[in-house]
Image (cartoon, rainbow, N blue to C red; front, side, top):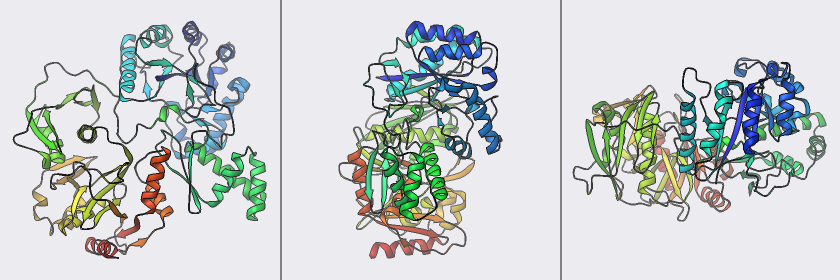
Length: 593
């Protein structure tokens, strides 16, 4: 069942919000209204909000005057929220939700609002009801298409953004809800602060509202002196040190903040004031990161596969200037490009998979221009819009992986290069700019095999990495350092990615589905002038490094346990470097010891 949460911003409006409430009431639908303080001060506005609360809707804080909070100092952010909070009063039913105007926020804004007890809610489908000079059926059609796409992709939740102060919304909401009822498996849900996902259907069993510090869906592992936690569909690990674990245990019993502070002060021999500050900061951090309280329903983790819900109508009669065939393992496919320029931008990523005589022509992936970007039409799927060709190619990479590995059961997908040597494989885990691709290319020139320069997919059953399309993407800054190893590097085609020139170094086409087990993990970090060296890390230090990098780790208890065990049984090293030869040498030394 796909659950849809209706949310409305910028009200209350004396007339339009009432019409919205009428339509919701006729259908027994629940919603969340994020109100503006200045709107609440209008004559009759509070009565509208009182009606909304009386009919079962929730009220959230949208600020006082729709200011971009990222441009305000901390004290103004606090006062803006509290001014509106005072106007809302007890109509929030004790549930403190907030939504930033325009959706603009940063870590500082998050921290300020979390410190005064607020839980943020954004959205994952914008109805575009605010766009001017378009017929209402257009925003209705667009919103329904996005919901259908999310349903097809397997998402559990959709959070829709509407604006109850707009006539286009108040007059057309009924038509939208009537059409929404026709989508198989889609149901309007209600916000539920007691539910671990923050959203539920009326027939769902009501979970008990216990301590927010003991979410019923949390998965917890003791890992040395630390604790590792995860929550389903969050896609993140939470690592608590010994002190934070102590606070977690105390607060999970239902203790108040002041009680936890007194116990912390007593056990760690610190002042109550310092302990109270530590508890307050910990709670704000956990609330921001989604460790406590109901999860933000719009932040549902799609798993290891990036999924696009920006659907577009496929242009009728599209013509293609370039057609190229590829084979990855036993999956043979064809990419058709509308222009030769599109082929030049995407083909180098897959060049080592190209085949002159494919076993079969399809399935077809088609690439064309679309309004405001580029469109990818995948076999058996809706066409999706992407802002740039590199973004489209990134999505295409994962589509190929899903087709080539049907039924793949993963425990993690890490932002990592993967290189095999005689005794197994080594992972190079780093965010962009860490030098992992350059280092992988250098290791390949020394006789090792590169299986990936960007993603490491770990199979749950075997604990081994799986094969990926494996050309190495090298940015301009790395070319001179690699020229002696690859004299041909300056002859390779150049692709512009995120305003940087990149050349793809082809590798041998993958032949095996499962790759050699990982025996060593390195966390490279290139910095000019840094002394190159390898420092052995503890398992918890390695987990902290992995949690700070891009990627996905399953929150399923069995899979997370297997992943933690995988890290614990692998030799892990910090690898700062400035000299490529020295870094390759340090890696070799670690592999031999």
